[in-house]
Image (tube, rainbow, N blue to C red):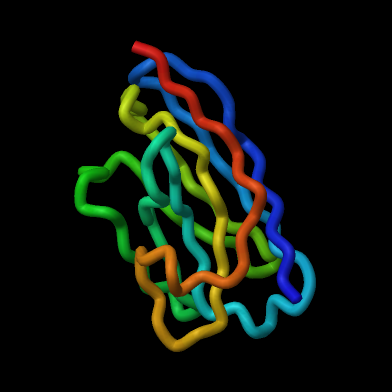
Length: 123
């Protein structure tokens, strides 16, 4: 079983930066895909960025280079560096993991989820 714990969320003004962290516990040897997804009030979860076990990365098209996903294998930790934050980035951000063959931005592929960390960006 994989357990995920996020941290690093908070409130920031537009243009600011945050770095989210996600530590994976348990049987992480089988984790082939990790990612960040977000959910704004009244909306479904949107894939933000994913990274596969071999380092392949995908971002949602609308980020325009503002976010960077990375991982530290030795620490079993996933990161999301968020720069030039905008009010529309306000959401609950979730760390997710999968041991399947597909690594994509789709919510449905992820069986393991953290509890989320709130990011609020004010104008």
